[in-house]
Image 1 (tube, rainbow, N blue to C red):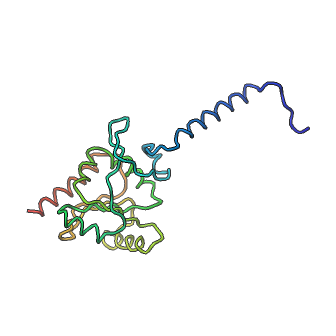
Image 2 (tube, helix red, strand yellow):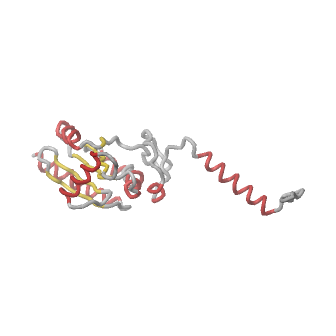
Image 3 (cartoon, one colour):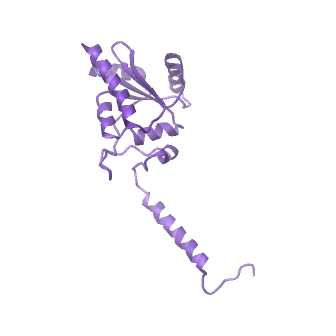
Length: 191
């Protein structure tokens, strides 16, 4: 006989069984959970489907503002019609820093209020489609960078760049300053 069975499990087996049961219970609690985990961990996890606007434990809105996707011309037209600046989020499907910004920065109330004043576009640059290659080339040629994430605020009436922000940050005030710069420049051009 290859395996011996003892009448009672030892302490090591009991501890392993308890640890595995705890891991199973934690995993089971994740079924149907559509909330981001927060922080750097979100950047490495598959994206959470965007939930509806609900408040999480810290009082922040867990929901996301809607973004147009992969159509710069349509977004420019929508922004022109709405007489709002265009916020372009150059992002990637495989971009951990992009996911961290989307789940850790965009839902912050101060950031969310400012983004709500703009038409928003996600422009993926690392996908397999022609539109993704076109957006990557546009980012490279127009802004001289391929860094992700890369954020641009444009005036849709003149196609003028109002503000840019490259890479991710955990400093909310830096990102809010960028958004305020773009909104202020748009208001100045409006008059």
